Image (cartoon, rainbow, N blue to C red; front, side, top):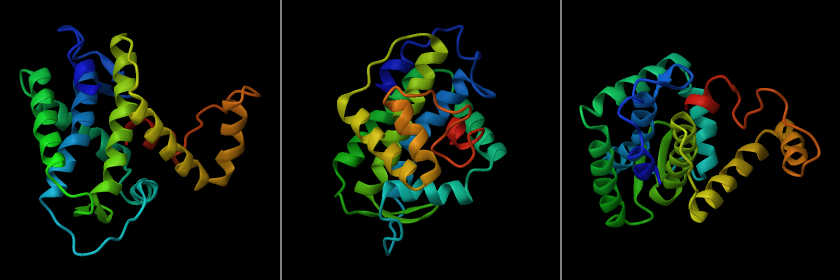
Length: 200
């Protein structure tokens, strides 16, 4: 889905603003990191599992890694790293990383910035990133996207887990999801809507 959406970026759209201060190129670069980090962490085995649930990855990252300026800078750097042919760079990254994931065991223990995780527990965090940011990209370049059923279900499950960790967010989300009232302005499953929800 991500690769197919990147293919639809127009030649004149790469420098358009897409999300916050990010251009389309920056957003694609940041989203591509969801693949690259899998490759990196597969090469960094961990001795013990410290983070057991995908939601816990985001909860820990929210506390330790969500500096808005740093996240924005990493996105810009990742965008520039795509080079002169971003479409090919993204496709090649996806092919390479998916092959590595296909050859790895589910319980391979990876070193992530927030602690050791099993591959099978880390991958949903990457699906979440790819799903949400592909929706951001599709909106930025005005092309429709249909979420694969598996990615949609996994992402919604993770959203539910994140909301459950913040009891004050549960009622507003349930009321909005059942058509009773709109979400409050700036609502996010993350602590800081202005940073994590848009750029993490």
